[in-house]
Image 1 (cartoon, helix red, strand yellow):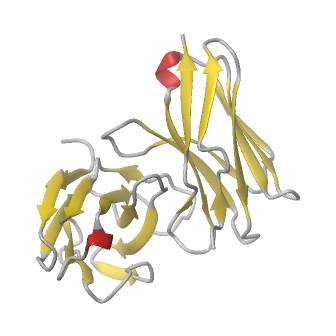
Image 2 (spheres, rainbow over the protein chains, first blue to last red):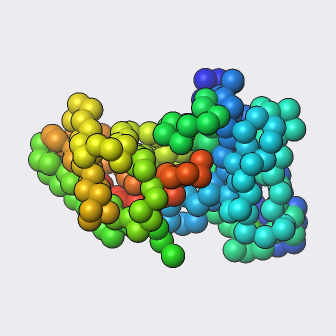
Length: 116
Length: 111
């Protein structure tokens, strides 16, 4: 497809389970971002990749969160030992620009995680 | 510490009238501002942006105004249409690559 694709769209996990969320950015886009959106809030930054390099992971809330983009294309966000407060929509976004701050981001539809 | 604030969670306007959505920011290092629109079960989509060197940017029915001294920006939609009903997020960026978002305003345009 032409847009950013995320899977799964919906995930229900029991507390303590590990989950993996996948993002397929737009082909050729250099920059990839992960955001977390809690109910009724705006997206909050988690981490940023430029190609395969993770340049900023300052938004990851704990060491249970891990992201990778090994070949500079598809990215996976992994959450270990999920907690109820991890319940949110996880948004992936990509951008063709690797350097400019002014480029718009193209968002996927998100993966809604519910931790019981 | 919310660096980007949208103080109105919701706004209702009549079709054909002007919609004005407001946003305030606290970080003076922000130099680029964007508005995103979000429909239910979809990701946010880019709407319009403005650089800090400008005070106005217009694109069709959408105009964004920036008041740097007040650290305030607004989005004007005129005339408003029922299809404009969505959540609107204000976002800002500075030296860091990521965007900082506000909490959103739900706009409802009544036919």
